[in-house]
Length: 481
Ligand code: 4AD
Ligand code: MG
Image (cartoon, rainbow, N blue to C red):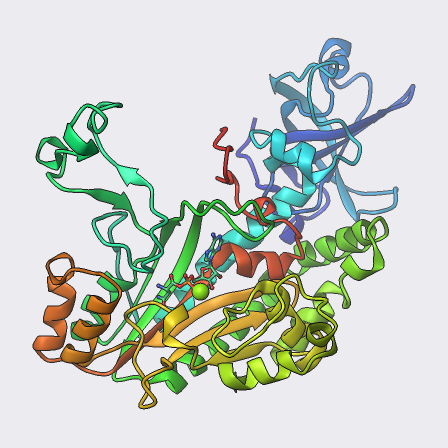
């Protein structure tokens, strides 16, 4: 057989009369007496290629083994299609079966499967149209992230995955150890003897690369880290993963306004990049969402079509307001007065739940919202203390349908203030001496944020469950595959 062409390339540049080889997995086969039609897909593009097989071309044995899920290589001639739905197709001359799929046993039948069923078959769900589209979009966005920062002179820093520090201070970390199971119980008072552990100290999987990214920014100016992070929070929701990917830029000599500016530019850039590079996949997902919405309660339906929603974000400024203003709006809302929120807001200082975030975005402002200057009590130790001494230079970006998509802040660059904040939150100096050191030597104002990559993909693709935008989701009681 001649050299294989990816189906994407085939659709981009091929002329009737050319001889080509394509390879992929059979989506469907339709057979009549004189001819068989095979829809073949190799994942490079949403569209299948139609293979026309006339009976004398391949042996009846091979043809009868071609079913949904089988892998085949086909050499043939490009011809103009007489059928609907495609302009060109391939008239097969030779078919090689590389892997059969017994139709009685292959889990993915040529019909609609629920997302839940596909999740249970994560080893095969890459072959579904939906997850193929998601995979291509996810890749394009990874590429877009690196392109955005590279074009602006940010250096990509690989921050450690194994760490001794809890950046967010929430105590929701997975332990990393080579001590045998039961080791800690066998010791007096349950105290673990870390001197016998691999690193000679207590180590965990990181929840964020921020602290190390700050060290880099305070020498290299503009940096970003984009890596996996791990959170052992027991939240079984459609927006939480125990393992997810976070994009964290960090800029020296930048304040909170610069930070918000970068985040808004970044989010719009990624959306534009997806419209420019993934249009067909997005259109497909928009249609999928319309179908899905037919079966859900009106209150859970998407208020806008997917592409309209994306364009809406591009065309509108994000609304900026302080936490104090947000609390005023929420306390005066009918929902709060009638106690319709699950968490009724009783006072300034309350943490915003996702129902409150979505109220602000979807009902009050009808635009993405940036909430700034949260109470210090509900935010992490590293955020810069405002002059009022009760709020910090924090910002959260809230998106429709999702709630919080970005969390960021201006960092506390003043040594004494930072040290005091650490002591108040029970972080011993000795744990973060290196972090404190950057404030002792050449400190500078600096700011950064973290974008939850899967939350963003959820927004972009309209997938309602975060488990459907990452190949192998990790959630409580779920680490199959
Ligand atoms: O708000 P978070 O906790 O911020 C940080 O970790 C900072 N260190 C970031 C920084 O300033 N460099 O997390 C950032 C984002 C959230 O806004 C959310 O989008 C996402 O990460 N996120 C999750 N995504 C999926 N599953 C979870 N369990 C998530 N927790 C947070
Ligand atoms: Mg947050």
